[in-house]
Image (tube, rainbow over the protein chains, first blue to last red):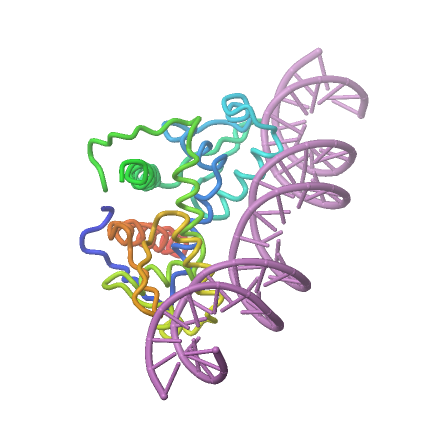
Length: 110
Length: 110
DNA sequence: TAAGCATATAAATGATAATTTATATGCTTA
DNA sequence: TAAGCATATAAATTATCATTTATATGCTTA
């Protein structure tokens, strides 16, 4: 768990923030981008090359990830580098993956 | 973290499962439903009453949550009870909430 | 078996979002 | 300053999804 003594309590009334975050994580291509830059900042063209997706599509998703505050941007000459704003997003991604795989495995077993 | 020695490794190629799970968690009303049944199974009408949403909308979201394997169903007479399939989804929800609130707080600070 | 409640389902609608295609912007170098 | 590369943006298209409205199904009880 990220937080054993959470400072932010969840209320049935206000779940906008986690829902918004989950929406950012709900697209497979965006998850691939997050993993792709998880160890070091990378330029758009490097990401395009690695993930084999079109440049406008990558740019679109990067814009979305920036809007959700998940990545930060930095220009260096003609290149623009994207970097994780907080690497703990990878832990969350791993938790989602483990939990989802677990659900699927159980469905197959029982 | 859910898993310090994860059995399921993440690959940039296959992130369908976590993306699908995140999509289930990306709607505020579905999160409200999950929290609403987090302590005990509840009937559809009980959920409708608590969350003040229309019955067809609640049924629709419950169907979606069932499809994602997040809830299980049980009929008792005329009532149909929904229950969390795995309560650890609440930990994940809390992590999402904490992380999201953290991002927002930082944006306001810096 | 008719009536009534609990829930599901179907159809229609409106909104949002992913992707593609085309074009613009901005930096660098000759 | 023209040419070229890196990236962003805009427009068009298609797909997905939340919500509403209307209706059907299934259980129970009189």
